[in-house]
Image (cartoon, rainbow over all chains, first blue to last red; front, side, top):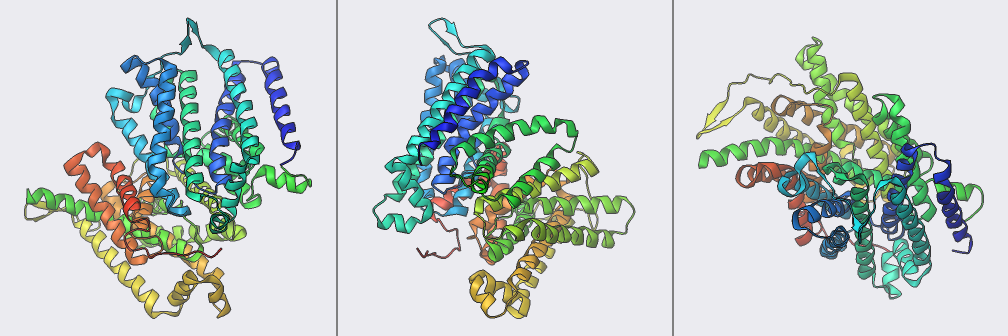
Length: 310
Length: 291
């Protein structure tokens, strides 16, 4: 990683600053907010998939924990929404930590199974515990306010989410360049070899998994607070798959790839809405084609094409 | 009491047989390519939906069934040729995304062609339930069990007594070594996709008269088949059959005795527990890795 890494961040920062002035209406502002939320989640997931080489097919479960913590805890227990957000993140992190120890003894495919199972269980629980979660119909989320100042409307949320995205990119770049990041990449290269040179493989994997779960939970809370309503769909299997797809299409192990993947795949359903009924087919087709022709993902493929490093 | 238990057991074994066939499908493809085929569930859906379509358009039942198995097998072949072979050796996640893409395409196409409705297939030999110790067994369940047993026997014969089967086994043990002794491993891969698609479709046809079918039944059936395959130790054929049956039985028992609204979560709770205490499944061997 060299200084080039920051140019992308400056570029994204600049775009995020001018974008509100250029967007014609709130429909596009809403789209950009959702892109930025997904980008932060995907950054966290990419640390796990792209850098630590571990697959999670149940990340939407963690998003669901955060979203429902923000929905249920303030209305049922009278918790402050900020406290609810933190509680959700801690719960998601704790769950990830408890699961991580036995699961990370396993390799690739088994981990995929375990995370997939976890995601589905969380989704089923959310659908069934109607007293807490409103069941399949979902429930409203009370707004968040600090000392009488209520965060509401697209403009507030845009500012929050845009700053969060820039901070996350900055943090990811630094993390990858730190001893921790190098250990992660070594781990992806060869687990046994990195063990031999003294990397505590298990601890690193657990840390990354817990971190990405907490990332997901916090962004789940923010999604819920922003939209003002949660439904079980936020925690379903297809959402998990969408997130993994964003990582892979953008480019595993590529920070700007995560952002690009999130932007493209969040916009895709909107673009496909004109296909009336063919959305699923076209979406699936795009997934297949992009993986067949660019198995490494967009950013790494393009970077290789133009002779630049990511 | 006993009647209730038997009732749950019957329905568990019936559904479990379908999971077992799906699990066998996962195992076949996993063994020849280390791909987890997330489109396996769609083959189950295709089998059921095509059988419904052909019988409703007046094609005689036996021919409908043959078509409903043959067409998904061709879909499997095409999928392998077009989407899997060109990216051989890619990261497992990449391959998983490709199979998920394929499953979305198949599901979407069926939704456009036959709509979002739920369809049923007439039972093969009547709807007169058989009474056993107070529990009832549908004749269709016997069909499911019988055909599953037959399939398992055929596969056993295929893998132990025929050259193609042995070539497939050899490829699963060591691909390079298999190529060195002259086995066409690309052909093996192609065959494994056709076989698992046919297995899935067969399961989908058999179960359609009992559970009904629609364009989206493949998702959960496929995932539960995957649970069965992992439960038995991924890559182990006998394990897949036992795993699939176990998933079915435990799901039925859980739904009956604990909570029917948590039915769909049972297989996944089970697999998490198993992975905690026996990380490589019930029948999986220990694996070692080279640096």
